[in-house]
Each structure stands twice: as C-alpha cells, then as structure tokens.
Amino acid sequence: MKNKKMIVLLLVMVLIIATAGCVKEKPGTEAAIVNGEVITVQEYEETLEVYKSMYKNQYGDEVLETEIQPGVTLLQYLQENILENMIFERIIYQEALKNNLTVDDAELDELMTEYKTFFGDEQAYADFLTSNNMKEEFLKNSLRTDEVIQKYVDFYMESLVISEEDLIKYYEENIDKFVSVKARHILVNSMEEAEDILEQINNGADFSELAKTFSQDTTSAVNGGDLGFFYKGQMVPTFEEAAFGLEIGEVSEIVPSDFGFHIIKLDDRSEGFDDKRELVLSEYKNIKYGERMDELENQSEIERKLKL
Image 1 (tube, one colour):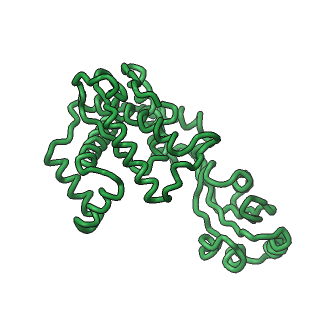
Image 2 (image 1 turned 60 degrees about the horizontal axis):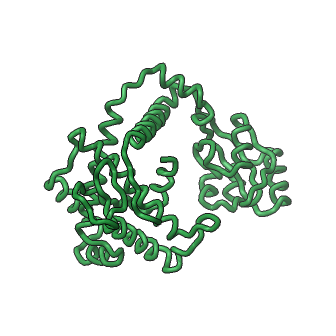
Image 3 (image 1 turned 135 degrees about the vertical axis):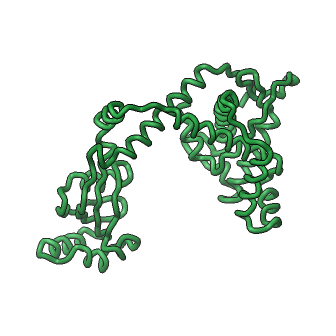
C-alpha cells in the first residue's frame, strides 16, 4: 500500500479490469487471487499492453527502456506495479459490492456515451482504441470499475463522523502544512543584475513594475511577478525558505536557485484554523480513507501467482 499513490500518479489513465472471477483456473493462468477471486494472466497482460501502448504513443517507442530509478526501467516498473494496482483496485471493488454499490448497464451506457463525446466522432474514438491496443470491452469494464470505486470513495467519505475536536487536533499537529503565503518575485540570470534591481527597490522603485520589465519568469512577470498563494513543498527549497521567512511587505535578499537569482516580496500570509478548516477537513478525510485502505488490504487474503 505504501506506493499506491505513486502508482496512480505514474499511470496516465486508471483503466483496470475488475470483473469477477471465482472459477477455478488452469495452472499458470492465475496472476493473483484476491479473497477468492482470480485476476487472470490474460487480464494482467491485456492491461499491461494498454499501458505500454499509451506510453509509446505519448513519449515514443524507446520510453519503456528509460530508467525511472537506478537499474529499473519503466517497463519493469509497469510489469510489477500494474499487478499490484489491479490487486488494490479489486479489494476496493469487492468492498463496494458488499455495500451494494454497483453500476448497472444503463449507467454504463451513459458513461460510455459521455466518454465518446471527448473524441468528437466515431472514427477518432476507433483510432484511440486501435492506437492504444485496447478492446472496447476492456474500456467498458474499466469505466464500470472506476465508477463503482468512486461510489465507494464517496460512500465512505460521507459516512465518516469527524468531530471539531479531531479537526483542531489534526490542524495543531500539522500546522506547518496549512500555512500558505502570497508572494511575488523577480527572476534574473546574473547576480550583478539582481544586485542592481535590489538597489532600485531599496531606493523606492516599484517592485511590480520592475518585475514586468526585468523578470525572466514571463508567466508571473505580466502580473508584476505575482505567484499567488502557495504552500510548503510547492517551490524549490531555497525559494521556499526565503518566502516563508518574510514578514508581509518585506523584500528578501537575493535568493539563488537552479533557475537563476530571485528577489521575493511577501504580499500576504494565510493561516489559522478558521481560514483553513475546509482544507483541514479534506486532508483529514483523505488520511482516514488511506487508513481504511490499509485496513482492507490487511484483512484480505492475497495470493500473488505471477512470477515477474
């Protein structure tokens, strides 16, 4: 379960078959058995082929041999983690069915119609299936599974009973995560240019106008260097440390980073439980859902049959 979030972020589309399979399979045809239900080798291989095609279509034929960590190619990573993801999805799917959360054929037809509208016409849809080595039945099963799982997520979240005391305690224990700052910056390529601009600011020049004129970050420059609100972990470390260390209205010293040399001005800071309550509630629910997923996996009987 430790890498499930990573798996979901890496795989471009969550298209996992989760059809029931309680029949006794011939030796060598079982990829895994989850609480008595078989995930077949055929299901696994079909899913793997779809993902391989998706990656090759988007990044080129050589992408599967790219090392995503030392000694591990993307193909090797997919081969191992697709099966783990299928097991994970099957566990949630089973739990959804226990709670009478299903998708009937009429709902599935509606989902398919909505999905097809994305392509504009039937030919573009057919080309998508062909280019990704995907059968329509695979897509239907995937959409059904994804919708059933989403129903379970919604069902579980709505069933949670969370007290205000629990939320406040979680906020206080993780307060740094819920502080955000609003800043603007000027990015230049050399220390000399940064020193010149900082001197102009210290002599009363308008920060926003200097950002519009000199900043190499063209996206924020048009707005006077405005970066909006951001939380810790969203910026490079040196930039983040400087920004969060400023008082409102204060301008930083020159801050070097891999992008160049920054001058930062803090415009605002947002903190306090009342301001962040909805964010705290959302994150707390996600924590509880993660704990529930761990619990379900620990309670499940899982046999991994496929040798990868």
